[in-house]
Image (cartoon, rainbow, N blue to C red):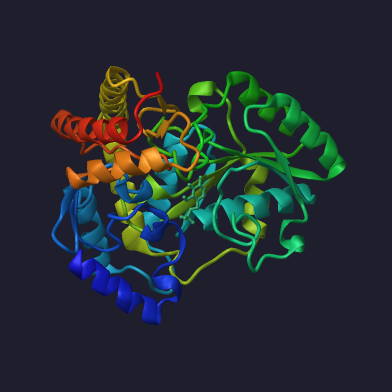
Amino acid sequence: MIRDDALKARAKMVIPGGMWGHMNAQALPAGYPQFFEHADGVHIKDVDGNAYIDFICGFGPMILGYNDAEVEAAFEDQRARLDATNGPAEVMVELAELLVETIPAADWAMFSKNGTDATTACVTIARAQTKRRKILVAKGAYHGAAPWCTPRFDGITTEDRAHLISYTYNDVASLTAACAQAGDDLAGILVSAFRHDARHDQEMPTPEFANAARALADQHSAALIVDDVRAGFRIDIGGSWEPLGVLPDLSAWSKALGNGHAIAAVTGNDRFRDAAQMVFVTGSFWCGAASMAAALATVQKLKRTNAISHMAKLGNLLRTGVQAQADGLGIGLRQTGPVQLPIMLFEDDTDFSMGNVFTTTALRHGVYLHPWHNMFLSAAHTEDHIATALVATQHGLEAVAQQFPPKP
Ligand code: PMP
């Protein structure tokens, strides 16, 4: 990877470590490119000209595929008229109206740029409304990169985390105990749409857990906050807890909302409207009208088409196909959580060396998978893409079987 290596070397001179955060390819096994030069539909091309079918979709934003014509036309049309200026454009109201109409738990919406903006605003609004401090957070859950939630502790003070209490996802007893610990200082219960911690089997929320979270929040007059940043619009257009019949008070959205354009949203119910109005949240680009136009077009297209059921159907094809291949080779493979957000983890693979062999082999066969993070399907994937992916996964699993022979 000649150009990739050269760019990495140049980056190291002027960017600390060459790259920050979760898109740092150093976190991936050798062979993964850091830099890309082209993306279209479900295809990405690295700077050395290697093309891949992408199953990461930019870590979620690409729900209709890269360069969706309808979304890009809406974005360009708005951008040509105005984007970031002294105040919002009409499209902000249209987008809020569309979200309120689409998301049963939402009576209002506010916009920002990144998922962290949205989760942080949810926590701030919950505290402002309840005039309390404690927020319950599931162990291992990711809610963003601000000091209150970033998974690394460098540069973080204990005071930044002083009012967080942890519980175990899907464990009603631990959630109840955390509520008791918060006592009359409980501001909110923060839950991921489903358990999607990296390097871990995924877990859908059980109905018992979701109902208990709602009931405990009500009992304590606290906020139930669903972080739908990652899963939003891939499980249910009305919100990921909609199929459970549990309505959150506040929800955080981003990633797929604008099909790759920078936008995030907080939605909430009327109980939290005054607090949402009270808190001071803003950003230089939060009124960006072009991303709002992209989001409007994205949500409209998701509603008009069968995007979610299409992703589920293809996700099933991928999951059953890969499972049959693994079973055929006697390899223990665990695939968990919603099929639209697949994860593939190997038995007895604590250091992910099997996952690394699997995914780097697939990469060499033109399919970009992730060894320990959930992946993302898009509405632009087709059965042909899944068939091509299954050729690559077969090679990947054969390499695993060869290097890690199944125990007799
Ligand atoms: N919450 C969840 C569940 C996420 O997956 C992410 C991003 N991976 C965030 C919050 C933070 O979003 P962002 O990186 O856009 O700030």
